[in-house]
Length: 247
Image (cartoon, rainbow, N blue to C red):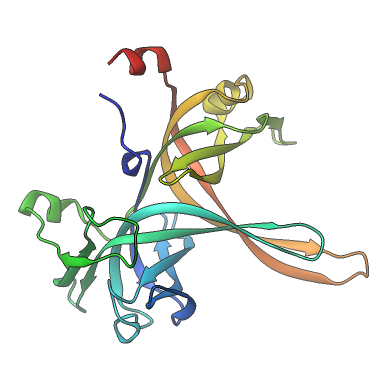
């Protein structure tokens, strides 16, 4: 059965709001707010994942620093023009949200009406989850599924400590002839497999979204700390398009 556009890019994250919401932009009278969600890894270190959310899904007053929430949506990219070259900006675009109280109980739930068209602002509705689905919503959830195409030659390297790493850039098609370009990274056996892949190959990836800080040095000698986002690959498989088309 063919995969729908929505199913090609599914991100599920939960954590605590780490930054005050900032108005990103307006569209059709709908305001979109951006903020970071702090998600703890099993190692104890945090990831800070940017989220973009409509004020029709949750008002600005609901996005309180420290409040816990679960977000389901898509990991999207956007090119931001710069003085020398454009920069790839990444964020989780929220389509469903669950807010929790201080005891961890569900307070409110809402989701975008998936039947709404693209002719204007999206509509939203109450979100009723089954008890089984609610049981799957856990603290510090960080899961992503991507179905797309390799759009740059993978870069395979071995660190001085003999750790094998590969970087790939995945193009994931979106509705209305748009695509998201998602940087991904993997290690060990997955890295060796990715290093042999070719531009244009169709792959499906499961993993997690991670953030990392780095220091950028400028020609004038100054330095600036920045943050980058990427998908850490847990599993990768090739998609046989001839078989998909036959189905």
